Each structure stands twice: as structure tokens, then as C-alpha cells.
Length: 97
Image (cartoon, rainbow, N blue to C red; front, top):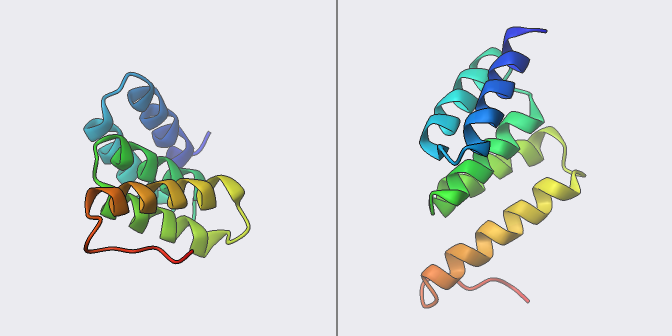
């Protein structure tokens, strides 16, 4: 198992135990070793989302979309984060539609 995959696995474990701040840190380390790992970017976004940090979650999802624009999980996670951000700031952000 390569180091990036090991770090992602460690981050997944941390996230599963709702230690989101530690999970983000672990995903950051995994991304340092493999910046094109879609799962690390997506899961980093999910951990940030769980912390209520919707803007940074969207940035992580955007990076994942850069890697694979067709991934439906990433697309759905990004939409969920955009909606959460919009509901947090209803007068400052309006989504098309």
C-alpha cells in the first residue's frame, strides 16, 4: 500500500469517529503525496462540510471535479454544500434554478 493510500485510510477512520478536524489534516497529508487522488479531495470536502465549513468544502469538491468532472458523488456533495451555504446566507448567495 502506498503512503497516500495509507494516509487516506487513516483519515477515513478518523472521519468515521467524527473527528473531522483531524480527518481534514490527514486528508491534507494524503493530498500532499498524491494531489490527484479524487477520494481524498472528496472526503476532505465531506469532513469540512460536517464542520459547517461549506466554503472550504466547496473548494475541495471543485478540486475533485477538476480531477474527474463526471463523478456523481462529488457533484452531489458539491450541490449539498452550495445549498447549505445558500441557506446560511440567503440574502448574499442565490443559486440558479
